[in-house]
Amino acid sequence: MDTLQQEQEELVNDLDNFFNIQFDGQACDQLRQCALWAKIGAIVNLVLCVILLFLWLFTSSGLSSDNAVVRALLNVMGIGGGVTASVFLYRFSIRARQGLRNLDALPINQGFASLRQYFKTNAIIVITGTSLLLLVIVFAAIFGEMAGVS
Image (cartoon, rainbow, N blue to C red; front, side, top):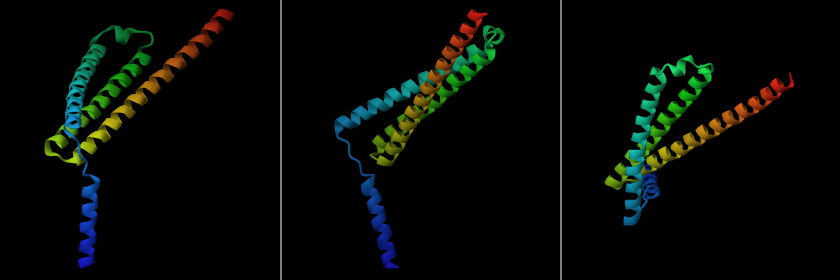
């Protein structure tokens, strides 16, 4: 029984050492500033997404357009991606500030995980948008050539 308890205590100590990250004063200040601006950016982006959602839903030009389905799909992707990215950025801000306030590395690590998800989400949005734009250009070129041949 004593060996099992010792092994568990060693495991806890190893985890404490693993999460025992130290920041100097300048790094703490930089991380605080990053967390502050991440929070501001996330809130502004979320407000912008809500405004875009209302503009899209309550303007008649978006519904009467010939390519309303494409416009709706792009709006949903843009607004959904923006909200998702804002959530990850806001989580980073809250967790990083909490970890710095309590001098606890676990919330800081969770915050960095959210920041990683934020960048991953943005990369997926950019790749998807670029791919769709390239497809539109290719189809426009193909159908433009076909219309010119007739």
